Image 1 (cartoon, one colour):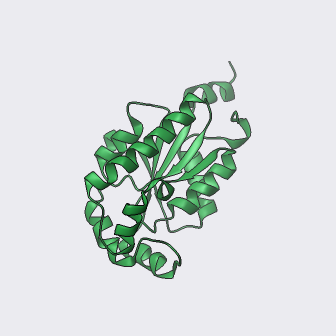
Image 2: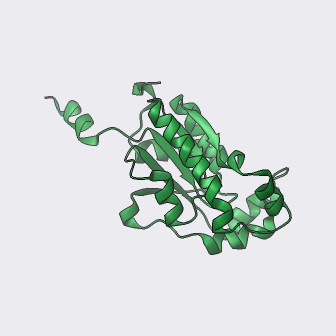
Image 3: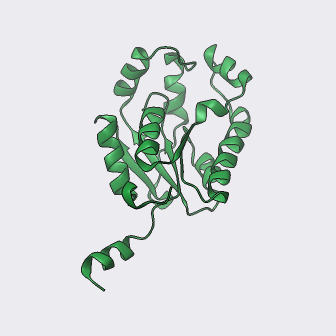
Length: 186
């Protein structure tokens, strides 16, 4: 076996579904959509899985509880399961702020990779202040950071800083997860 073949074999396949996680304003939707486009995979925004009641609660400045988030997480996990069952790749933007949420999304499925978009409160606050038309008000940012349980080493989550442009972040994700768009089944 030649050296390039050995390197490719040793890398192993990357995930078939990628969850792009982080606090509101970290760039999950933008980066997730760009990543999905590069891979030729379907993209889903976790915001679209929230119930109308949850959106109204957040819009009025009330943070969601774990009980509020349970049906939402179940819906996102079901979307992930449907992509895997169909043998198709997917990227989903989902805050996945707590370890138990990430465990629900992975559900023992090694084909699910997680990427944590990591940034300072100041950077994220600036992004939220500049964004228009989103239901999540800037007043809830502190609750997002308070709820955030940063991924630990045993979770095998790829952490990527958000200081760069989305295209550079996508390249870091492709490299970090060993995903190569030109060789993936679509």
